[in-house]
Image (cartoon, rainbow, N blue to C red):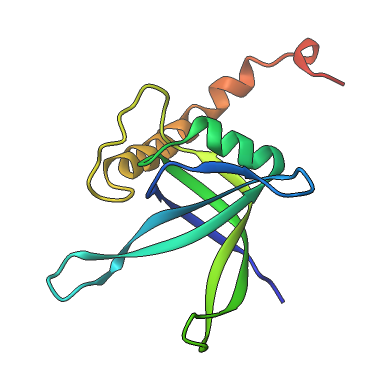
Amino acid sequence: MINKAVLIGRLTSDPVLRTTASNKSFVSFTIAVDDRRTKNQDGTSSTLFMRCTAWNALAENINKYTKKGSLIGVDGRLVQNNYKRKDGTNGSTIDLVCENVEFLTPKGTSTGSNEPGGDMLNEFESNISSSNDNTNDVLSDITEDDLPF
């Protein structure tokens, strides 16, 4: 069986770095993921809000390099957390424990887009296709002296 999720979305608030009693760093944050295939009753795209957690050095980097509105790509495993509500009923949440995070908002770029993944995602997708065209140019510049082994 496989438990793997890959999402691209925007942080809904600034991440806050915390530490456990055993001195391990962690950060919890929520990303808003636009689902362009599913529409709300008013015709707009629906949005999924996914709670995420990252640990140790990954958590410290997320805290250092992201803020509310930052576009990030996350991958990891889904976990179900069960809890008891104040009224005594049982509840559960599905969260993503991050294994890898890609910072997709370029340095110095404003993150003020109203739509999660909006213009930045379109720019990211176009950069991917144009960077594939330049791959052979970059590889032709590498010599044996450049290799570390």
